Length: 162
Image (cartoon, rainbow, N blue to C red; front, side):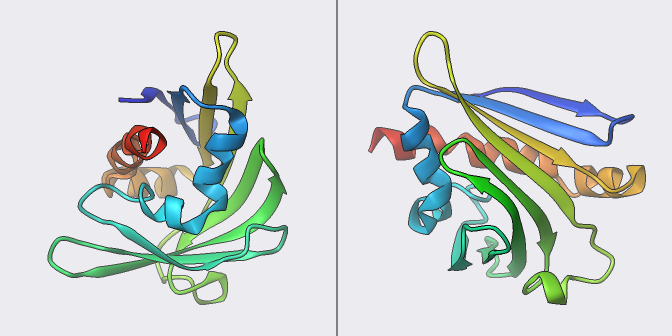
């Protein structure tokens, strides 16, 4: 599996998932920039994602839904805060149809993705999630966020090998 570490910091209210891939930064960026590639890995294997809107630009909006094994649909959105291809993406990440229609009782988080060259070749992808409160962090972790991201990012190697 490509995920090399998951670090939770309860004081800083962050979770950092780090993965390594044997491709260039430009190739790794396409995993985020191309919604059809993003669909192939965003979400755990049993909850595939479908991206409906994909505006990967400052103030852009990305909307998607994941379909569970019983056909249940879970909607999510990103509000793009910063984008610096091919190195950095910062989004507000939440549940619901879109940022203006966020799901009640569900916190949104800030997700910072960075892509850096490895010294020995390849790329390190770091996804840092910042939570608004300890309660929000605990809620998201209890919902399986750590396992979901780990499983999702574990699907990337297969995409890159194709």
